[in-house]
Image (cartoon, rainbow, N blue to C red):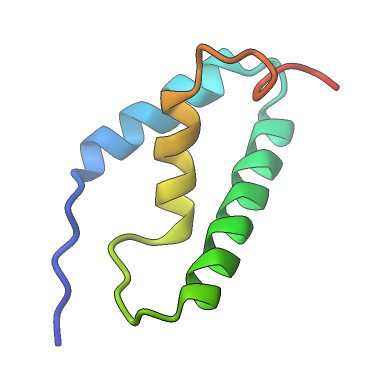
Length: 77
């Protein structure tokens, strides 16, 4: 069964570029995206509804790019 994703790959690339350009450290933002994706994956496993709308990494990129106005996401700790 083929699943149709509700996102455009060009939009994901644009959002990824926006995240990377806003961050002072590319490695740190990559780690934060990975951590967020891991959390989202864990939440989906807990729900176990069998419905996967998008991959956790893509969801994390979308969420974090939407939150660019919050400096604690991309600031140095």
